[in-house]
Length: 521
Image (cartoon, rainbow, N blue to C red; front, side, top):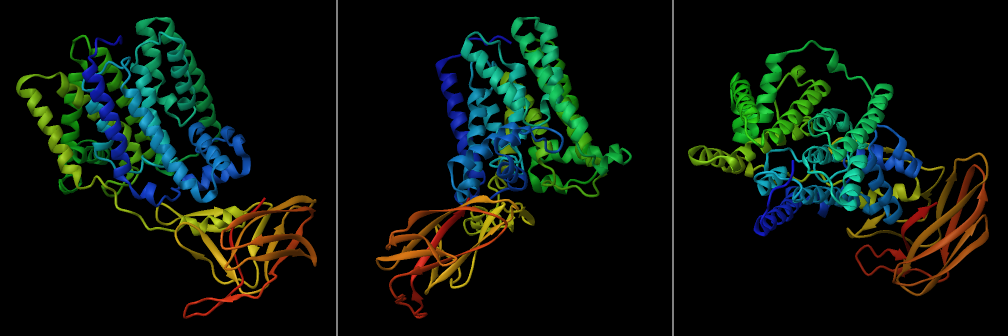
């Protein structure tokens, strides 16, 4: 496990590989950064739970276990950015986590052959893309921090100890994989019997117990797990997902008749097993990765039960195959890096062919754009709404807050230029605030206003002036503190002190003042 000598040139190539892999993640799904939208549980779990509980959501299990890192990132988005930027924050944070994973691979304490190619494998090995650039599937990516921890050399400095234990705690409480990979830490401690391995094993046991208790108490049951086991279908599905697709590309993999994928699976696993168990000084390292593959593949098969599927395809549940597929690729890369002669050329040629055959499927097609900028206003106002998010057909049922706002009469339809939103009023216009608490609660409103001329917009509540704001062509933000109010409706009337101007277009609308983003707190 101790790192051997490593040249400066080798370190530079590892850093280059980490930078390239990060860029490739962004290139794989450019729309996730250029036109970001929420993905599945990003909205229906992490956003909603953060709205309701804040940091308290850290203690809420979902699907039977804690999701510490996504919960922290969702909270940070909520306290640092406006709701319209949350999808970008989520996706960029997920990219930063991927970059951190790649950078950790460059540590000289991880003494692995072919490390630049191991780093690039995260991105270039066949995948459907759903693991990257979202919070929902972040735990599949962070599972590799746990694999790294099982391989890394013992910490020698306080900083190394702090990083290792901090990563182990955060990642161990993000997803169920600390349970799955616990045997790796126990076996390492049994083999090495040093203080570092013992401490890591103790912490891993505690974390695994926490997640296992939550799984036992709150984890859902899944109907496919009640079905009889079908090994023939399982071999066919695994053969396509783990061997045929990464080697031959998507089209050839799906065109293979049964039982060719199953034969490829048996042959691939037999070859990997022979190489993993071959006696030499690096066998312990390979055995760790081989055991990691068996543990995660077994857990994912039990959870997903692909032997119950009626057809073989590539996208459904691909995140469950991401870790075992990548571990097999790692073993192949390490074999190629240490091989010599004809065998080295054969392995490296097969790897290059695999990358080329999958290159046409590397950039994932852009999904429908549901225009999060326009949809996000409902959350900003606290208004109940059904919001379309990704993947296609997923709906975020936003329940609204105890005080929320809706536009009333006097406004034109909302407009947008892709960067901001607004709606014009020709004359007096109203906003309705809805208080759903039975006891009095504080009501505060923040308005963004502008106009085509210098004027004053007065805000009245039940005939009483509660605000008067000087506005011009530059959008400005104004705050209203309306005091305590019990359950009921509060109708704010906004009116300008100057007559509207006629819009210099064919519509010739009278335009008094415009309301941009507005918040109800």
